[in-house]
Length: 486
Image (tube, rainbow, N blue to C red; front, side, top):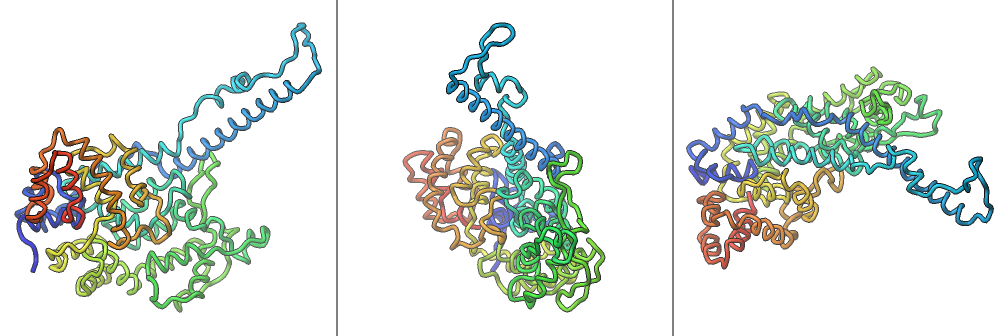
C-alpha cells in the first residue's frame, strides 16, 4: 500500500526533504512524486556561492592566519622575557641622550609591530561559519529540498573532517560534491579523490612509493588509508571481493597524489601530482594491470571502480537505507542498482528511480531523523533562517553528536535509529529552547497541520491540544514521533 494525496505530500517532504514549511503540504498534494521530480530538474539557484573563497584560497588564508598568530606569540614571549631580564638586572646604563636604558614592556614591544599586535579575526572559524550559513539556509529555503538532501547524503558518503582539513570542508562540499550530485558517479569520484581536502584527510599527501625518489631519499613509505577507504567505503563496499594486495597496489598507484603546501602564496592548496613521490611501474588491481602513466594511472583505476557491479550494489543499498528504511526492501535496492549500472552511474536517473519506486512510498515511517535533518525541519517549519543564529545551530548539532563536517571516522556519521535514539533527551532541551523563541508568534495547532497534516495521530493532536502553553505545545510538536521520523 502506498500513500496518496496530502499523506503522500507530507511523506515526500519528510522522507526526501527537510520537512514541510507552512503551506508546502497543500502545495504539492496533487502530485508529490511530480514535485520531487521537478526538484531534480530545477536549477539550484544560489548554491554556487561565488562570494565564498575556494578551497585553495581558504587553505592559504588559514596558513597566513596561523603564521601571523605564531609571530604574534613569539613577539609577546620576547617582550615578557625582556621585562623579566630588566627586572632581574641590577646593572644600570645610560643612552647617549642621558636617559636610562630600560627594556621595553610587553605592550611597547608589541606596538613595534602593530600589524602583528592587532587582534586577528579567527579566520578558520569565519570560513567555517560562512560555509555553514550557505548550507543551512539552502536546506531551509528550497520548496522541496530533495536535491539538498542528496548533497548532504553524498557529503557524508565522501566525508572529510574540518578537524584535519581546516578551512576546506565547506569549500570541498561545494567543489567536489555539489557540481556532480545529479551528474555521473564516476565524475564525482574523480573530483572527490583528487581534492586536496580528501588527500589531506586520509593522509595521501604523506604517502610515498618505496622505490620513488622521495621515498628513497626520505626513508618514508606507503600510506594505504585513501586506497582502502575508496574501495571499502566509497565504491565497492566491504566483502566485495577485493584483497589486501589490491589495496596495496592501488595505494602505490596513487602515490604522488598530493597538494601544494598552503604557505605557497600563488598555488598553495592546489592538487599536485608529484612524480618524485610516485611508485614507478605497473600495478595489478582486481586482476587488471594498469601501466604507469603518472596521474592517469590512478584515474583509470577510479574509472573502473565507478563501473564495478559491486559499486552499483553498494551505492544502491546506501541510498535506500538513507531515505527509506534501516532495512530497505531488497526489491528497491535491486531497482536502484540496475539503474546505476544501465545508465553508467547517472545519479539523477538513480534519484528518479528512488522517488518513482512504490517501495519508497510506504506509509510506515522507517527512518529516525538524524540530528541535523531534525534541526532543519524545525527551522523550516518556524521560518527562522539558520544563518541568523549560526552559532546556536552549530552548537545544537555538536550537542546532539553530529557536529557539522566533523565525522568521527571516514565512514561518516551513522544512519540508523540505534545510533541516535539515545540522544532524544538532549533533543528535548533544544526543542524547548526553540519553542520559547517562536511561541509568541506561532499557533501550535496551525503548525501541527503544516508540519504533519494527516500524518499526525489522534494521540499527538490530543497531547498538543492539552499543552499548558504555546511554548510547551510547540516543543511537544517538535518531539512528536511523527516529526522525529521520516
